[in-house]
Image 1 (cartoon, one colour):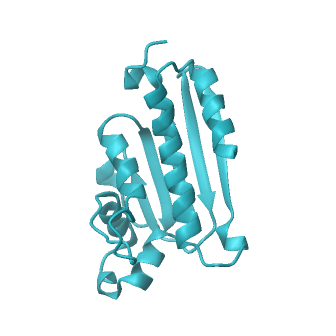
Image 2 (cartoon, one colour):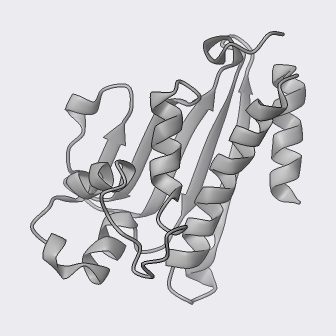
Length: 171
């Protein structure tokens, strides 16, 4: 229900006519929500998440931000795959975005959330993707500057923009 309201907000503000575009926004948000539910500890407090959508009139863009206060992506990966302890948190984020890490369930349809979002970045469906998680920092705008933070971020914050002009949407 909440995702539907967010999609409707984006559709109206951006005057989206392309149903595939709204489906891409929906898929991105749902993947992030599923990740929180599946990877956060079973504590109700740690499975909470916040989603914000903001319309920037000057850019004609809707910016999305999603925050959860769970363990963080790198911490979760390190707990499940001990052989990856030598990688930095930022390296783990990059590796996960590239689809290199497997789901602990080994089910073929799992572990697709972050790689799908990164695919949207590569296809120019998403701009300005930023991820803060544990000590990891990722920026799609300047991948060379991605490096570990000195102080860990508790949880995961992901922000991204949908900009119809960049995406070829006709208004």
